[in-house]
Length: 72
Image (cartoon, rainbow, N blue to C red; front, side):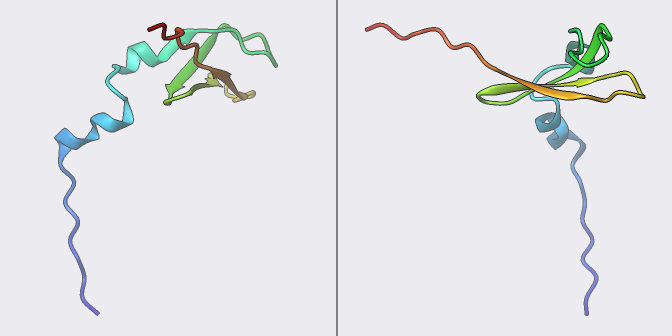
């Protein structure tokens, strides 16, 4: 059994923030469960996931992204 050493390049960690800084991901969005005004935003290709920042809540909810209609 051989041990493989895995090295992580610090420059390749940009995929985790998807081009945004961490300050851009902490947004003023009200939680539907506890009405906490702060949430963490994780943006994907077709939807956005929000996580409540209140430690006792941590509710997660999703919203669809709005795409403009393409007219040719």
